[in-house]
Image (cartoon, rainbow, N blue to C red; front, side, top):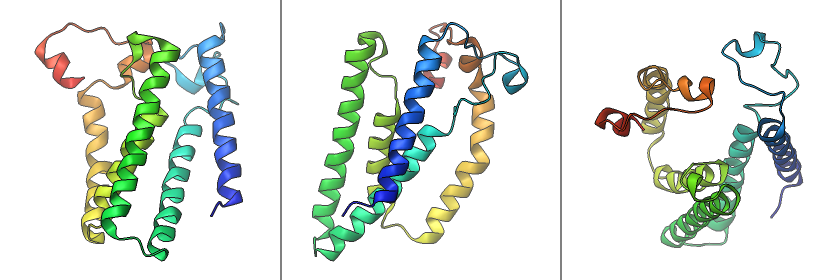
Amino acid sequence: MRLLSIDILRTAAIGMMVLVHFVENLSSQYSQSAAGPASREHLWWLPVGLAAPLFTLLAGVSYHSWLALQRDRGLDDCTISKRTVRRGLFLIGIGFAFNVFVWLPEDTFNWDILTFIGSALIFLNLIRKMPTEVLIFGIILVAVVSPALQGISDYYAYWINGYFEYDWTLSDVVLG
């Protein structure tokens, strides 16, 4: 059963992603400066950071409604898990294929929204049977540890420079 509101929001998210990618990849005036939103180059109307999270949220809502429908149909847990993993692997494969055909082999293993949502579906399949307390603890742990890990890995260096220069030392390879 399709929900029209989810389809409309998904269409809006795809439209925003197309807009952001056109401006980021094709505009000669767009640059990500270190000053961020305070810089003259910042395009305040560009929905950067909104489209992909919205699309991911809608994928989770769709998965929840799909899961409820499968349970109402009387499917056993093993069949639901197989279908979920198959859908997740399909999205990961489509994401990598898209990277190969659009960006050529140099960016084959860059994770984009399709590979992320595919892995999220597989992850949702793994955690859907966990107790609520474990899930809440995991969410709090991620929220507390993420800022420290971003600082340790110098996460923002790539986004400021537009690239990350590798030294090919063991520490750089381990950090990603």
